[in-house]
Length: 265
Image: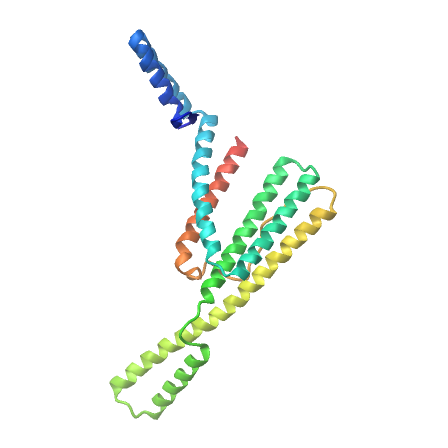
């Protein structure tokens, strides 16, 4: 419900103010009570189906959810090491410079808004890459070399064939587990390489956008479509932050949908 600021009371719904006013007037003239009920019955259904009123309510709701999203996003930034935070800050600074250039060129508002959203999408992809890398770089108790040595040792024991059948089956099961762990660890190294490649690609993409904005006299619409080498959705690369990432994805998707509907209305 739409609210207004009232001194000493804070934000109060408009319909509540109106109902209170008619209630007070009704003590002097009971007819005001009937009038207030009639207005309430007529106005609320009309507002409920009014597009402008719906947009105001949606905007207020988005403002609250945006605040929650900002907190979750800042929590993701804080878990990064200082070097990763500096990389993210440097990218955000360049994105801000791009918008400053377009404002200097007196670009239309819709171009600035569109480019602002495109740059935010690139920043979000950049942050997800940094979060994934953070979790993949967490130290483990074993290295690839230590797993390889254990696999070689078990292979040798199994080739000797001196174990009982039950012990052999146990060692085979252990060997399969070690091989899977090694494959996962090797995939992790590949994913880390892909993530670093994607980070560099986004850096270069924003650099190019900034150069084009500075050189070209006519403002251009920016595209945030960029094909990444790393598969961030394939597996739990975000660790315990997987839920927060998913929630932010849904929030940003809903914001984009609402903005599109408002622009079309």
